[in-house]
Image 1 (tube, rainbow, N blue to C red):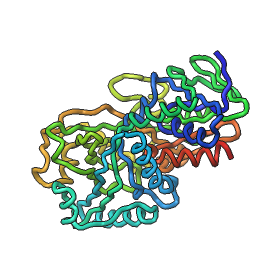
Image 2 (cartoon, one colour):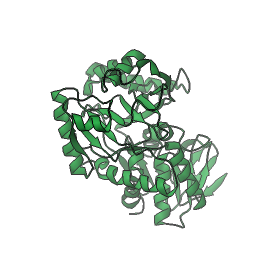
Image 3 (cartoon, rainbow, N blue to C red):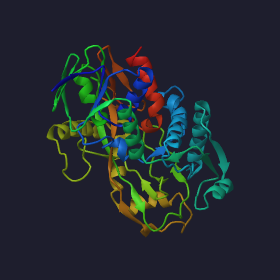
Image 4 (spheres, rainbow, N blue to C red):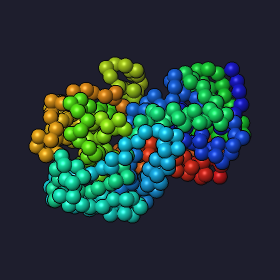
Length: 402
């Protein structure tokens, strides 16, 4: 079949949905189609992430992440309140384990204050007053604005809004290739003769971009994220508890998440995956993806770029449940949680992390490329869910309707 649109958006994840939402706010009469190879929206990272709304203190001041996280946190909360979508606004503590991590804690505070984040360094006693179970070295960083939502519920709500605004969806429609202003899919051709094709493909964003001549120096490196649920009770931990992260890579370390339903889980891992949808076993196996990913993983392992070798060994250790749990129990008082209470693995997710092939480094900020015909969101990594609304506005204003 063939139909003409003003805008064609590839993939109905949080970014595709948010870009369509922003476009409709600016151009109410725009004719928009969102296509996705899955049966519904938010099948991958957008529906499998932790649901944490971040507060904007991890990121350097010159980054797009820093620019959008604080506003994104506020706007996502406003949206959830307007739609009666549940939130858990319990906040977050970032804890240190030694003097070196204490210095990094103050660096996070400096970054957060530059970014306009509502945070402060508090004493160990103040931290214990907020979360009696917590253990930290002298100080902790408190972020009262960190919250949790159900990411799938948010995405489905936005999808319903868009349908009511006249946006079309074509699910079970796989992008195959392109020809000028035409998207060739498993369900036929769709055209945007005077508009744009907008690539929000997540795990496949680099491949789609390269079809259009963009993203040539990048490739996607998938990392598997696993969480372990605490099934003993919902009360032993009351707040999100995070370690001081290694600021040289984009992963935040194993932490406690309090979900929107009050559940306690620890994670995630950042285990190098071998193909893009390497969730479990040999499901969705692709030999071409395996070959490409393995090639770059071997290259990173041999060069030890960004200390990939140590990262890979450390992450693989997390398949050992006892070790995985020990990383979490190090952040709480002895006896505060029962290690045997972590019994249930949650649905795994894959983080779509862009690798710069020229420098063999992980790209830490959002990346957008494009021209008059197409726009490509190449690196919508965490906290893209938190940033989605202002990030989408930025893309629409500066790349689509400019």
